[in-house]
Amino acid sequence: MWRIRNTFLSLLPLVWLVTLSMAEEEMAWFDLEKCAICSKLDAEKGLMESLNWEAHVISDGMLSITVVPAGYEDALLRAAEHMETSLRELESGEPKAICGFCRSYGKLVMAGARVEEIDTLAGHVSLITATDPEVVTAIHEHARQAIQEAKRVLESVAARQNGGGSK
Image 1: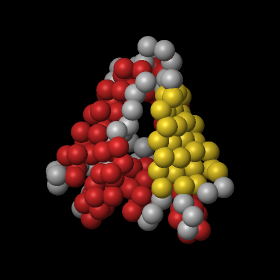
Image 2: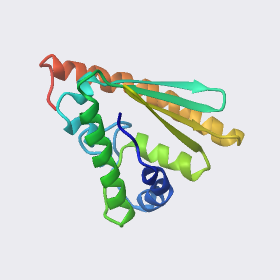
Image 3: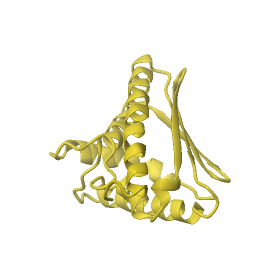
Image 4: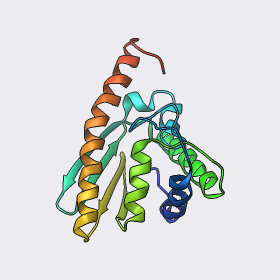
């Protein structure tokens, strides 16, 4: 299955330090068109329409699960590779816009949240946890907003799939 490389996680603090300090336009929480990172998921034909994503608040943070049906593993791998490329470009100082989710995620990492990535046969599991109560609270807020906003995005993707919207 696909793998988010260790370089992805090692780059996060530096990438977001650079990005968060740059003046950027305000973007939606998830922006599949403008976000330099999330847009890579939507660039793979049919991936967003097929992808199942869920997040859960857990006692010390957040659990995120991504599952793709058979046949979309390579698309998910390509998207992850392109996301990693965008992160490297951000690290090198190339200005890029990122959505609210990615910005919030970066702030969590910079605040000391620990990220564990687990590959599965059909997708990926991510744990974002902390021991500092303030960071745990921030992770919970991030998770709640992600859960709420994901419903909106997935409804939009479903409408697009049914011919009711543009990419």
